[in-house]
Image (cartoon, rainbow, N blue to C red; front, side, top):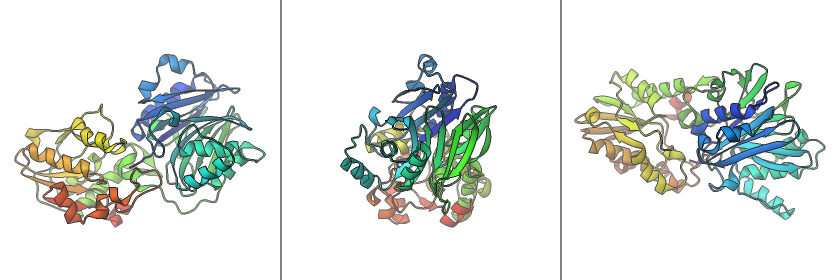
Length: 429
């Protein structure tokens, strides 16, 4: 899948060290992207920024953060949705415009980026990187609108796809969400500071109180006078990406009023009703499969046990760019508890099967550890079609469910049985 990046912003009316708050917020959003991280800060006059390749705690240290003084700041963690994994594509994108310097952090994917890029190139615009985010920033910079907010709204009306964007100007933070609300974005309050973030877990780490989600097609402007809201486009049918609930979001986050852990737990309960099987234990593919596995165990009355131990120093296999790294990553990342699975009929719960390569290796790992039977259960429906809104499944050829029947997938995985959650019960969850 491509994913989902993570965005964060804070306007602190009193303190002079928002960079540290952004650092902690990005740390809480690290699961959304591990390729690069960046923070931009304004002191009311100038914007300073620092970004680099790697995890948040690899890019920033005490010295770097202390050099980013100001009152307002935005940050970003990236997984490459478009563009390669290079420093030129790290965010926030900082660009000079007729409205002043801006720093833009974007989560999502534009489906009309090729046409927009070609249009700008015809106008003589050149690009440093290859991201949709730089494209959006360049469109703002070339706008003929009188003020920045109108320029931003005009730019967004030309953008088709998924976007939750946080922008820093010298004296404002602006947060916007696409008309369908495909990617999450929420607002929090910390004393006199306002916070915006991709997920509520990033509010929690600061002790900020959740205020509400940014609405579809809404623009939030935070400045010295406080917070105000305007609609840049009438909101359309809500279509938050279901993979936020299945995989991307942290289980302690709340999206659109629904706790992610509870949603995954109920996915597991429905899965047990739909695809029961006689077994000795239920286990999860950690970590996103754990709540569903616990739900399956609760409904089936089959004991839940840990059967796989995760090496927490290895990134998420699903959101690493190359297949070679993914293949190696499974054994680097997961190791079976042999005494827990030996001689048993095992049910493995995973959140999804996209390409099938990871699941096949996991089944083999459990068999090699001595399991008598291995039954795979998936807490989401078969993924039949590619997504162009920020998930790294760009072609049908990459999707195993587009090319094989459920029985064909079972044979490929070398599992004793395979069952997927229905779309109906996924929605109920």
